[in-house]
Image 1 (cartoon, one colour):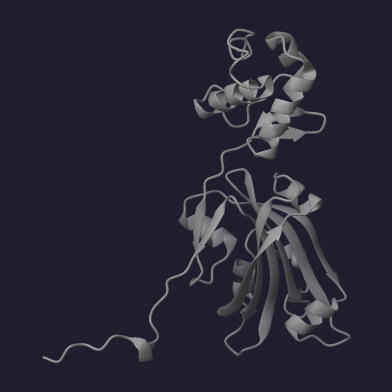
Image 2 (image 1 turned 180 degrees about the horizontal axis):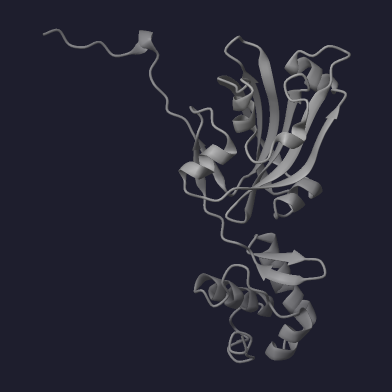
Length: 257
């Protein structure tokens, strides 16, 4: 650490000092000197070791935080951001987050924010086909894999289908399977979103960071709507892929034998 923040190597003709310090820290992260999760010394300590002003040090760190390379936790300090592996998710399969991560050999963790039964919102009434006197079970949680928060799920299920949402432990679909209410098909809508302060904090990214908003309506084999889920995925962690084919009436004709 002392070599990284040595006063030697800062040159007058090599650009602004904060950029030189920023490059030095970035190179240390790229070469494993500062691995993901490691902490940086306090700004005043870096200033003392490098001989730079605290304003210069703060400017270099703020630039790396803005890029997502560093994260700052109030009361704890500045840390190297965890390395996020981009995941490709096929849109042609109706799977749960738990099932998808299990196929990849990754661990799954749910950080529950709420599990409760309440009166439905107008949006939930429309999506689930509820009556004025019906109740809805709401489940809100952060989905993590290998310790990295990847998505926020906000699922709504009619209380007649899920009277006690606290019974859902890991996989919502696995629980619905046991009661015969697992969706067999779904319609999804995906749109871009900039994460607000609360959601960004839950996903360990900066407010305003790019995210993917996914709205899913799941159906039973009877055609009844059983699930209305709104999820927010980290934009730096997911690629969604779908296979496209020519429509039957536009397929090229085969040459005659």
